[in-house]
Length: 150
Length: 170
Image (cartoon, rainbow over all chains, first blue to last red; front, side, top):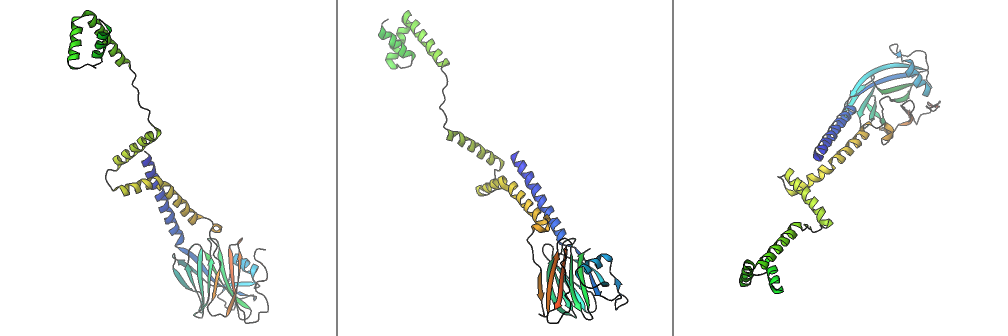
């Protein structure tokens, strides 16, 4: 009877381990991201008429931290990154980002400008979190790469 | 019948006589009525004493008591697993006794590692690498907004206005 109890307990424990690791693998994989390239300016209109103003929430988030008043969406890409995999995304003619899924909530981002690696960034990205990479550009403008889970 | 004869009859009843002595006293018992009656009485008393005598057992020392329990357990284990080497049986016995605890602990640890909130996990600080050495970076984090901002700028150029003048958690 005592042996049967331990056998049941061991079976339950092993099942729990299997479920936990399966869930862990499921959580670790399938990083579904949205990557946006945004242009910031103090002008009323973007120099490119194809650029549309970003949503009010994004504008609020960026203008809370930066000096620019207007923000225009240059490009938006949906990216799926598997566990421990790397995905490269072209955002414009001259800019690309490479995203690697790391252990836990962390991602590694490589920023490329005109084909050259400009910066490597390793940051945690929680389920509801957002990572913004920004830089100044000519004519008192700025670019923003916004990475978040979708 | 004198005292000596009475003692000899008692010795016969107790089986203490042998050979000619036993034959002689047995003949006396057969021929003499008083001797026969005494023999009968002593035989009855002896039978009554044997039947009524309490069966006394030797008290068992405590170590003998526990060694009996151990022997019974070992006998049951041998019955449950008649095959296999004694080494593997000992290991299995140990595992059977601790498997539940070890497996349960493993499940709890795995669950904490997988499902614990981010603040319970070891903090991995942001890591920046400037591959060309031309850009500087400032990193701001807002826990409230789950927001991280990495601002890249050319430290060699003159910037008229600071790009991020205010803290984010304001």
